[in-house]
Length: 94
Image (cartoon, rainbow, N blue to C red; front, side, top):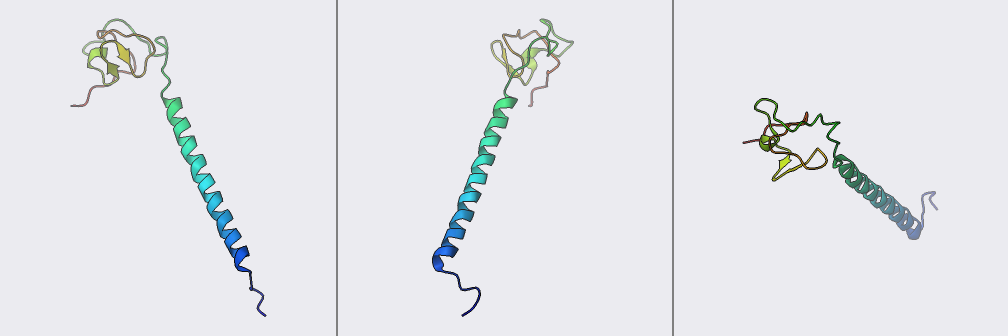
């Protein structure tokens, strides 16, 4: 008899455990990715953003990529004015 004579059920059990562990690891990575996205969506206060209710030269909330009409921002908490400005101003892409 050879030393490597394993019962088919032993091999099946090892394969099954391997697949379950792999699926568990992938599930954990997916959950971690979703949790990371949620953290990135938190907004900063107006003080942290150095928000001001007037434009900074040609830069104004109304022409910022983060501005959501009529008065919201993807980055700054609370209502913002279209003529306001914050340090998170980004030009809109054409």
